[in-house]
Image 1 (tube, one colour):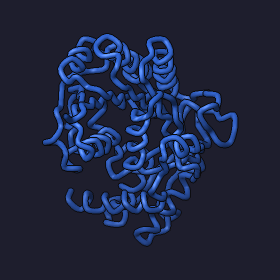
Image 2 (image 1 turned 30 degrees about the vertical axis):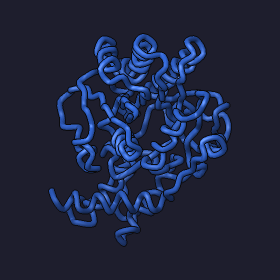
Image 3 (image 1 turned 90 degrees about the horizontal axis):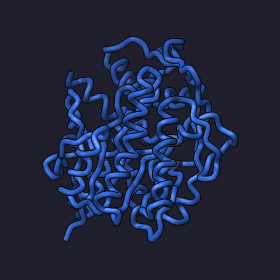
Length: 323
């Protein structure tokens, strides 16, 4: 019989790629979706998996709905990916971010504990929890110092997961994922903002690209690779926490150069530094050490940053043309 998996945040980038991955392994996939207005199913359509997924109305701010979903699906694996995940928005909506991203994860853990404490649970943690870094490369033992309401909320969810693992013996693991991107990334995130702008500028639809701190450095990988690590964590005999990263850091400036060069343009001719996009507290550099994930999960990122950015530009070009 097929295993049942429940994915919160299934309409997001990671949720869509994870759904496709699990379907390929013969899972019965159920997706939790909060009804909040705009069409959020486009990623599942783009991956051609929407008609294979059971979409269920529920919300991380409503414990009763989470209990009902777990009872209905009998999920053996629960992947909690849902969050208010845009760092900039977390400054404008800090309470909402805390409620959904932080306390929402705790509600999901509590629902699992009540309905099926034998289910395996994955929590989507983030490198933003490291924030003001204490050491140049971050691993599972690096101290946390989040620098945004989003990072603080994710840290609450991270420690809640560890607490439930230790207190109730749940098979609950955290993936501390560093930045991971794809053609399915939201337009508000810097990589997709850049690749979309490159497509528009190359097609004569836009004249400039406005960014904030282009010297910020990140460890960028491909989301399609990273969801494999999520699944691998829940296949281990014992739960644990893992950094998932490439181990290589690149500046926003270099990423822009790569994207513009792919269409034969010089980024310096179009880039405008705009103070509006500066964060109140910046995270300057993040670089993860994936040695534990490599050793225990046999996982490594397969896609280079150059190939990833080219993939994203190549996906945005026809999108812009269709407009």
